[in-house]
Image 1 (cartoon, rainbow, N blue to C red):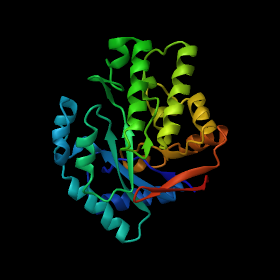
Image 2: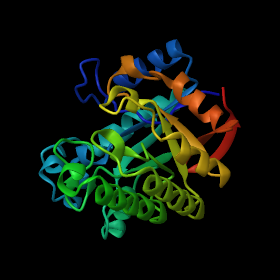
Image 3: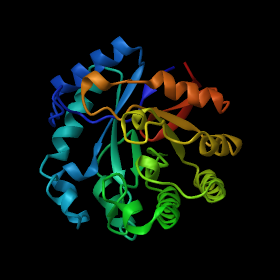
Image 4: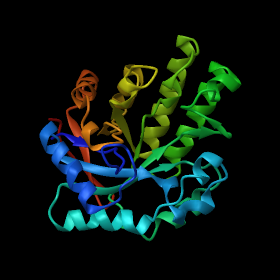
Length: 271
């Protein structure tokens, strides 16, 4: 089975379009790419209902859309028998776990995807950002602290682009990176969440899949399940380069992919 569990509901020009018609276009694109099931995971900060969570201007200027409309469009598609799931990409906010849970509680999610895009107020995947402000060693250390805390929060089913900190810029020494990978894999295992294998990094400055093979191998050694993702922001990018993500997963000896329904997970053979 091939799934794509990370995408943002937009029109072909990447403009926000939370409508049933937009969902149908994504489903058609998925079928053309050989993707069996897709999960929409719009950014949590695009919605008016989440505005009270944010203090970053980047988020505040974007939370203008209606979460009920987004949820309704995907539920309508599910009721029509389309192979879609209702998800959300949720930024982890240290110290705001209860408030985040309260905002999410009223909705029938299939899947919640945890992300770390800001650490101590510094952006991770924008330039200049965390690496430029703190240097690679401290930036990577803090990023993985936040990722481990996101895993432990109990809010999420999987962790998106788990080594996003490599998005651009220099890295710490090999020994430090190895230690961070091992410690993070331990935390993910203990939290019983999945890790995302994503093709999105191929289209970022780093030009690599997420995560690095040693981190994925460390997760496999601990029995951590995986999800698959393209992080498509337009229908034409659904399933983009997922064959490379599947190849990375197979190289780490994964044989199954995780599928969710109302936040209950099961394993299916990796297509």
